[in-house]
Amino acid sequence: MSLTMTLPIHTPVLFNETLEALQVQPGKHYVDCTLGSGGHAKAILEMIQPNGQLLGIDADPEAIEIARTRLAKYTDSTIIVNDNFANLENICRENNFFPVHGILFDLGISSMQLDIAERGFSFQREGPLDMRFNPTQELTADNIVNTFPEDKLGQLIRTYGEERHSQRIARYITKSRPISSTLQLARIIEKAIGSRRGRIHPATKTFLALRIAVNRELENLATALKQTINCLDHGGRLVVISYHSLEDRLVKQFMTRETKGCLCPPSAPVCQCGHTPRLKIISRKVVAPSLNETKSNPRSRSAKLRVAERH
Image (cartoon, rainbow, N blue to C red; front, side, top):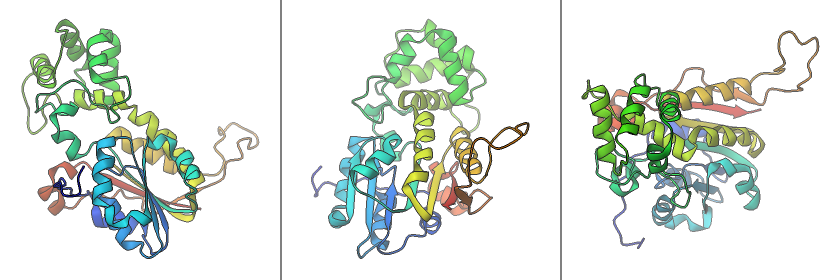
């Protein structure tokens, strides 16, 4: 991307709340595990001058290109890596990025990815059944939609999309194969369970489930969260913004677990796990967008921010 090219407008969700939770300070080291188009990262870079460093990670090469352009002013303070955050600890070690004073995850999909029809994320735009964050990986939504057995497809939609009509949708999908586009799939789902009720499109949960499965989002998040403990300096902050219940539950459970000592079953006569508290939860109440933010940026309405501090 040329420096003269117009960059997409990007409004980071929970912008001020995120910076406050991270306790961004000059001269410190921060990791943005979901760099995206660089909105949060740019603000962090402005606040860590002089001598601070930001490590930005994203699995999407298109996002990396946009972020490089947006953050060009801070080249000497920025390390940008095109990789999955599931490799967080190795990325930090390879770049000698220690100690880390704050780690940010802004999960889910960006507006930029949704708005590009060719990426196949949106049920409102005609595009291929792709949905990959990293276009070099083999598994696509097309593979799942057109090859998974009906029972496996239904289970996937139920588990990841929390869709109560999962088996009916799976049956309609398998009977309609081959399916080649996002709008075709959306029409099949609408035929299976009826038209829109309220503001939620009938295809929303199925598309979410397919995206999560294609990109192994929950597995990669669980892997990355475990690695944050080894990367964070004592007193460093872990901040996670999630957008649906499965992500938020996983984050909450991880943070809660890491505040505890022994994790052995109550029936164990003595502790054998040797686990010690490694995190302190900063706010028990989840942070949500203000009414003004949800009005100006409707895609923020499901966002939940959780923050913990390394012991």
